[in-house]
Image 1 (cartoon, rainbow, N blue to C red):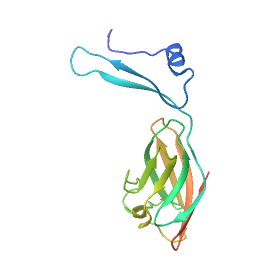
Image 2: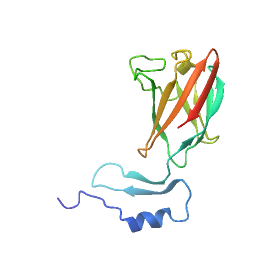
Image 3: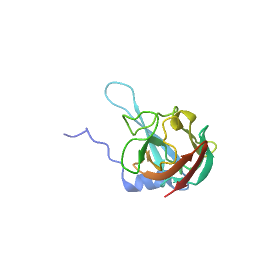
Length: 152
């Protein structure tokens, strides 16, 4: 059916993102016969990088190079595949309650609430999924009040 598809060519995307770093390079607006226009963000990104960190169960701040991307979810699992974190019924952690991204300071913080449900000495694998579709794996272990995190 004509008129029901919007195609952005590679040449247009290249022009919109040329000479632009990571993040929103352009915002387009799609108008329709009814309703409000839809904003479309053209984003330039690369796979994010999480670095090793040491901290405590009162909060672990992980250095993060978001590289124009935005976290969507964080999954936490033990080595046997069971769910880790404050809610044993799901591996998915709460945005702004269990993990908090800080784009201005390039960090991803795991909160004290997250650590309330972590078993002492049991390695936890985090999978941080981003809106681009990228997934970054991170490993952590808590002993007492100390926490060590490493990137994969």
